[in-house]
Amino acid sequence: MKPGLRIDTVRVRRFGHFSDLTLELGPGLHLLHGPNEAGKSTLLAFLRAMLFGFERRGNPERYAAMDEDTPIGGELRLFTGTGPLLVRRMAAPRGRKSETLTVLGPDGEPVSEERLKDARGHVTRELFFDVFAFRLEELAGFEQFSKERGVSEALVAASMQGARRLPEAMSQLSKSTEQLYKPTGSKSDLNVKLRELEEVQEQLRQEGNRPALYFAKREHLEALGVELRGLEARVREDGRELERLARLESALGEVAALAEARAELESLPSLETFPEGGEARLEDALQRSTTYRGEVARLVERLASAETELARLSVPSPVRGREEVLRAAVAAYSERSELVRALPARRAALGMKRRQVESALEELGLGVDGPGLVALDLSAGARAGLEALSSRLDVEETGRREVGGALARARSERERLDGVLARTETELAELPEVRPAQVRQQQAGLARMRVARGELERLGEQKMNARRLLEGLRGPMTEPPTSSSAVIPVWWVPVAAAVAVALAVAAWLLGGTVVG
Image 1: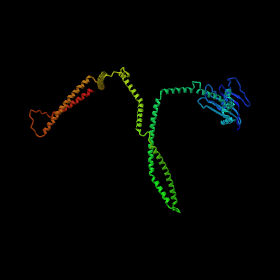
Image 2 (image 1 turned 180 degrees about the vertical axis):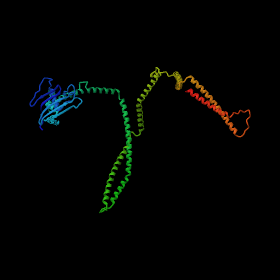
Image 3 (image 1 turned 30 degrees about the vertical axis):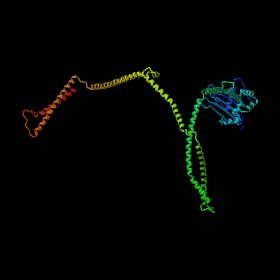
C-alpha cells in the first residue's frame, strides 16, 4: 500500500476560540495568513492533534475551552493512496473517557485505526512536529542555538530527531546546573550543603572525641560478644564434626578388611577360565571396590580437614580465659540498658503518682499544691498535731457513721409504720358503711352470743360430770352418797341442752338480722 496523504477539508467543531469552522483545501498549495492572534498557531495545533492525538490536560497546546465540560475536536477529510478517509477525533469532558477516535472509509463505514497509521507511513509524532509542522519560535530557537554553539553542533542537532527541542533542553540543563552549583554564587544547593557540612564538622571538632570513644568501646564490646558467640558456635560445630569423624574412624575396619581381601585376591593364582558366575561376581567386586575407594578418599579428606581444624583450635585464643569477664561486661551492659529503658516508665509512674497526690489535695480543699506539700514542716511537733487531727477525724467519721446508721433504722421504721397505716386504711375502706345503732346492736348480739357460749360450755361440763356419774352408777356398787353431796337431776341435762340450742339459734338469728 502506497503511503502518503493530503488534507482536503478541515472542520473545527470546537478548538481554542474556533467553533464550527470549515476550510475546503483540495489539491495544490494553500497559504493561511493573518495578523497576530488570528488563530494560525491554533490551526497548527489542531492539525497536530487530529493526526496524532490531543495533548494532556494543562498543556497550552491543548487549547481547551475555559469550561472543561465542553468537548473539543473536529474532523479531517484526507485523500490517501488507498482512497479517501474521514478522521474524527474528540476529547470528552473531564471525568469521562479522555479521547475518542473514529476513522471512516470511502463508503462511510468505520474502519480500523491502522488505516490512519498506514496513511501516515513511517512519520512519527516527533518527526512530523520537527519537519512538517513547526512554529516560527521553534526555528528562532534553533537559530539562536546555532549562533551560540556553532554550525557543526547545529548541523548535528538538525540531523537528529527532536532537534527543535534541543535548545530548550540545553537551556534547562544550564539552569539546573547553575541551581546545583555556581563557583561565584552562595545560594546554590551545593554551596549551601557545603556550608552546612563545614558547620557540622566544626561542631564535631568542638565536641571532641568522647562520643566517638564511647561508641568505639561499645562497638568493640559488641564485636567481642559476636566473636564469642561465633567461637561458641564453631566449637559446637567442631564437636559435631569430631563425633562424625569418630564414627568414620570406627568404619575403617571395613576398609582394612577390603585391603586384606585385595591382598588375598592378588595372592590367588590366575585362572585360565572364570568359574560359573564369576563375571557377575567380578563386576560386583569391582563396583564395590570403586565405592570403597571413593569412601576412603572422602574419609582421608575429612580426616585432613579435621586435623587442620584441630591444629587451628589448639592455637591459644585471645578470648579463652576471659569468658567470665566478657560475660560480666555483657551482663552489666544489659542491666544498664534495662535501667535506661525503664526510665521513661518510672518517670511516667512518678508523674501519675504526683497527679494523684495533687487531686487528693484538691479534694481535701487545702490550699497546698505539690511543691507546697514538699515544703511542709514534717517535724515531730507537726507530726503530733497531724496525728491528733487524724484521730479527731476518725472519731468524727465514726460518729457520722453511727448517726447515719440510726437515721437508716429510723427511715426503715417509718417505712414499716407507713405500710401498717396503709394496710389499716385499706381495711377500713373495705368495711361496709353501717349506722351506729346497728353497730351497737351487733356488739350486744356478740356479747349475748359470748354469754350463751359460756353457758353452753358450763352445760357441757355438767353433762360430762353427769355422764361420769352414770357410768359410776352402772359399775360396781359403791357406798351411797351422803345427804350432804349435791346430785344434779338427770332431767336437767336435756333441758339444759335444749336451752343452749335455743339461745344459739336466737343469737344466730339476731346476728343475721343486724348484719342484714
